[in-house]
Image 1: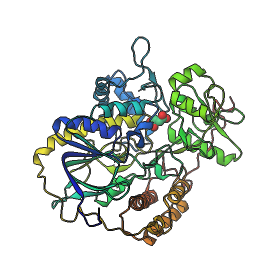
Image 2 (image 1 turned 60 degrees about the horizontal axis):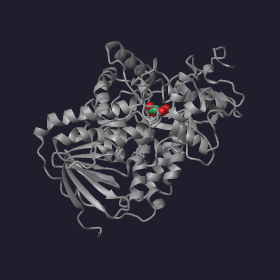
Image 3 (image 1 turned 45 degrees about the vertical axis):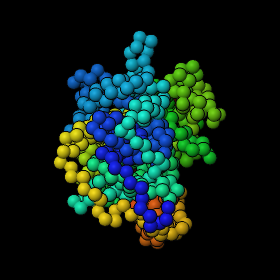
Image 4 (image 1 turned 90 degrees about the horizontal axis):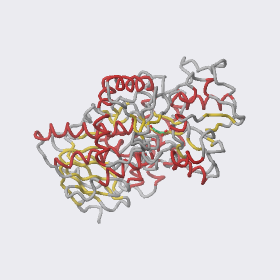
Amino acid sequence: MSPTSEPRRIDTDFLIIGGGIAGYQTAINLLPLGSVTLASRGSIASGSSYYAQGGLALPWGFNHEAVESHVSDTLRAGAGFCDAANVKVLVEGAEEAFATLVSLGVPFDRDSGGDLLLTREAAHSRPRIIHAGGDKTGSLIVKTLAQNVHGHERFSFLTPFRLHRLLKDEDSRVVGGLFMGEEGEDWISVRAGATILATGGFSALFARTTNPPSQVGDATAVASQAGARLERLAFTQFHPTVLDIPGQTPFLLTEALRGEGGHIVDQTGRRILYRYHPDGELAPRDVVSRSLWLETRERPDAKIFLSVAHLSGEYLRTRFPQVYYHCLDAGIDLARDPAPIRPAAHFQMGGVRTDMDGRTDLPGLYAVGEVASTRVHGANRLASNSLLEALVMGHRVVRAIAGEREGWSRKPPLRGEEDRPDRGWTSEEEASGHLTLEDLKTLLWEKAGIVRTSSLVASGKAQVAAALEGGKMGKSLPKEALLHNALTLARLLFEDLETAPRVGSNYFLEDGTPEPKPMNSAPGSGS
Ligand code: SIN
């Protein structure tokens, strides 16, 4: 294709961008209403949903008391930053979401009598998390959802394509997207009545992360460039128990291991966390990650491990097969050996601002799942509420779209919106003013990581600004456009950090914030 040729064109009723749980759940619900095109960067294994281990949190029993308790735990974990009304909507939507998954055939784990097995994770006051395949919950849910849409006569799948631009009409309504093939040569314009972002978060913008490499927030930056409001970008959740083996990709060791009695210990076997929080290993995730950071700062020679040696090999192989065999391949038999751990960036509470029906600030554009900021997670998400949000919002957004579609005018995009850009430069270094994507990830980990200071934030922001100003700002080749978008998002994140509240996940060590003191006399230390 020559640089000036027209992109191919597809017309569809609904365009979904992102092929994880939120995207497929939305697709299933939209198919009765019209044609659906789902565009994705890759297979289902390229997104975060596929790797979700812990499970799906539900107000099990679905009665008033169960809902109240789930809401209250969510608010407590969120460190004062949840929208309580939205949390209630989320938790009340769980029963429908669960019933849909069961009817579609998700193989949730059950006991021999057929009752669902419930587990617990940190900051949950009771066991309420269901799981599938032991620790393969995310992959089994997304596979089941995908099987239910692929092959449907109204469903089209576009991959591997990345969103380059959202298309707008003369009324500034979003009317689809312009996509670029992964090699930068194939361009497709998808015109749609409604466009739904389901592209996940951007924790892979941090050097140490549990997310797959595609999760760098590319589409979030594109949405921002189109005028969608982003918020709470500074609310990054760092997961505390991530396998730490030099030279190996970080690997999540699910919080359910602690829910089932796992201990966080140092090299002498001493439990660490009761020094910091009365709930020990079951303290909220942000507290645990910060405690580990503080512990290693106080004792630089300390080595931190997760120990589940109280569980038998047989139990671990059935209940946590993914984790068990991954560790075994790395030479760690969890039935016997403690696993070295270090926190990693895991989830973004903020993103594209939406209401509880998935509407963004831009008409025609909706967002569901981790890409969206619904304010249900506050400054620190309660474990296993993310799959719940993706599923519940995948129902709610479709109801909103169904109610609004009569009023859509289906005007064409403005002239020029579907043009592919000219190639602006030829090397990644030129694009970024000599900062590579890997450099940027290291910069974010070091300057916007678990514990921040104003001077780190200021210098990180200045480096990102210099890279953006130093590079040539054409955006044609995929790698270059990706880097440009990553830098744009990083700049917005640093800007948000400058004004973000100095609490919760945004932990700052200065500006009058008292440092948390270990609770030296707390129970459990030394055991
Ligand atoms: C985990 O399994 O520890 C992660 C679950 C989650 O992120 O909610």
